[in-house]
Image (tube, rainbow, N blue to C red; front, side, top):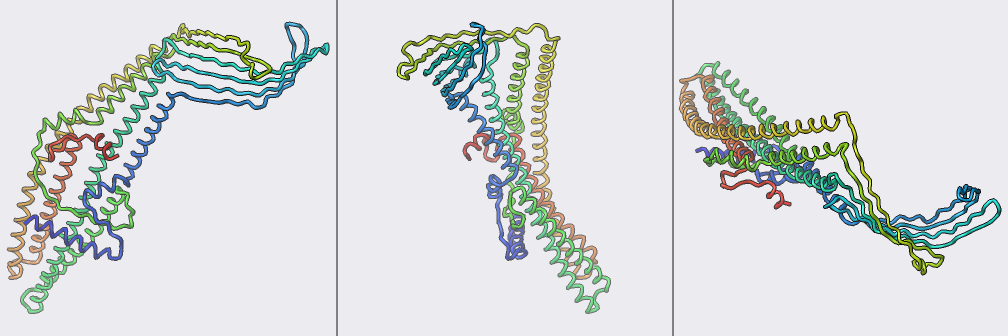
Length: 497
């Protein structure tokens, strides 16, 4: 009986919705089609997906920065003429020079040590002329090339490059998780709204049935009044019942259109398009092991992985805090050859070795307790995060327990609601006969009609509540108890991509 009733609701709903929107484009959706459509068009999913792509590009850029970097700096024209004092000879002279050149450089970051090794070649052609106060003129026109290999290495401090790469990797993983969570949230919200539209469609058809029954009752009473078989006040009551039924139909149409607009919004569908949901709400009760649901939820929930990543970020912040006013150093080593000659081909006929060694240290002396206070504040932040993680684990278990209890309650309510519909239908049919025979008034008959409509609505809502709560349990525990398999959102996301 119930399945026939649901098929009737579905068929009539589609038919009447098609009539009411004749001439407009129609989009008929099942729940799976709605979810697939939302995958590309849902606003929240779109924003989350773009955020994921942004962090992915940041990670690509950070990894690319660890590869060899080639650069070329050109100085095609450099002319100057100035008056200078030569302290060695204690005399003034005028210098005029023209030069052109450039520098080619290859920098290779070293991720393991946070150092940089560089190969540099600086080439220049210079034409220089100087005249002293006595009129003595000297000039030089030559090529010069300086080729050297340089190592720059910080010491006694943390590896900034390795930490920066790890932080960007964590940010990308976090964006990945946020997208996966957003997909789960979207699935739940879309399912709820989908069934809200379905419920509104079903309620509309129930109100139409009520209107049809009220119309038949009105016509029946009208004939009896005209034949002087019933009092006229019965006709007034029948007319009132008919007007109320018409008003209910109009209210349900308004509710349906509002629910459809909400569904269009979260699906990313233009509001002018007509959406009709197509589904069969059948329930196959599922036995759920509460302990298994809790265990799988605590082991798999992505929010806990986000907590772990946040803990790693706090560890990085502690490293930076401890590096404030720290003892650290820097080593610079380079070795190369310098050559110069008026003839380009002879530029290295008489090369000069140019080694360089530089070691520097930064030694903090006294900071008035600044570093100690900052470290203590960071430790407190880590403790707060630890407590929040423990609280979230409790919240996850609490959510799963509440969802399980609600599911068990809905299973009971479905059975009760199904029996209520059958009883209300039998009661209505029996009293309809009594009404037509004049044993009860129109007001009493209207009460039986309202009772039947309410029980049908309650039954439909009980079915929907169970399906939505079962989906919520799957999301909370990340376990599909219908298929008896765990849910791994990140793997599912990678497969879709």
